Image 1 (tube, rainbow, N blue to C red):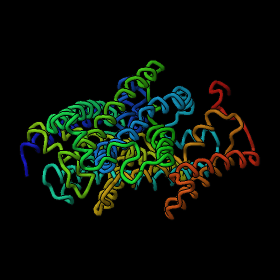
Image 2 (image 1 turned 90 degrees about the vertical axis):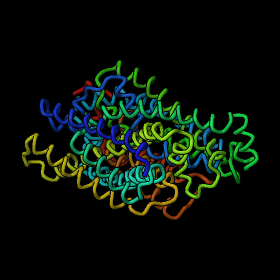
Image 3 (image 1 turned 60 degrees about the vertical axis):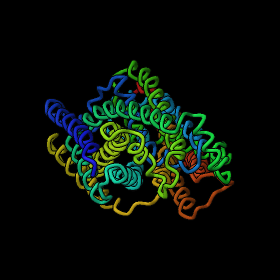
Image 4 (image 1 turned 180 degrees about the vertical axis):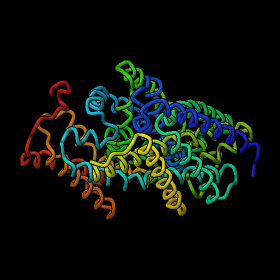
Length: 483
């Protein structure tokens, strides 16, 4: 075990916990329940940008994505850049209208917004259950990524690393809440940018320069330099599917959408779009290039997901390696805390309080219940991560797709289609969930497309048709000022 590497990581984790303690103390002075989940809607532009970017950039971006680039070459780097417009799309489509409505309805969760649009408890319950189920897979991936990072870089056995990383992340999330999440996202985002740039620079230096590395990749396999990759893996249907799955469809991700409810003003949105897009672009390009170019430096990995932690140890001095290992660790932790808080808010706000609507809970009691739920659910996910697959990116994309198939159309059409009603929304959610599950489980690829594409098409068609048979009442989404 390399203590020169561990020491900076320990200092980093101490700083993360210090921010959580600060957030915990700060919460005592305000509305605790609202602050726990959305920080009392006080985010400025920089924090909004960093929390959106850090929430979206996860174990797949620092572990799984570079692992895929290691295996499939520069074509995967090109493919990864499809994700550049995600912050622009999320804030541009949801943005101001979502925040105005969230304040109007005092919405804390995504299900609050859906209920405000459609006035249907069935939609809220189905959305809540779908979110919890999908997040089990999505967060399990993050815990696996964190444990693998410690295993490959520091030499800590996988199960031990999982316990250390998992317990630490769950504790700081549970007690710090949303405010700790966004403060840590800002700090972790900066760590990610610096770490990603320096890692790529070190790889290029160790490989003898770009020209030498490209020639070496060509000797290993010329297909590593083509857009399609080895065996034409990334064909046109695959690229089209990927664009829908990790770019346009991101608008429907609940943990991304909830960030659009918590910013301060219009200025924050405009700053968030610019800063967030820059952050995503830099990190996606540098990390995926690191994975692809790293094939020259480390050519014998059997588990592609280990490429980034292995490269960090290989090309950086021990102390520097410890400092920059905090970058992928930050990406993973920031995603876990966003998703874990989302699940906790769903269980408390959308399930517990809706089942017992007349029960009076104090603000402090609800916050304590939320902390307990976060701890219990986080502990369950640590247990679920004990037996990991070789490449976590596929499991992560599977969970992403499930969330998008359920939430994308009810969210977007609820905001922009005046006649959208509960019958159309619920039918679309059911159709999207069922079609995506069947296509994914049985590995059915219509026209060689990823299941998310036909699932979203089916969901849209079902929404439009079913909407004709439902009652169209007032939809305040189109004009938030009407009464």
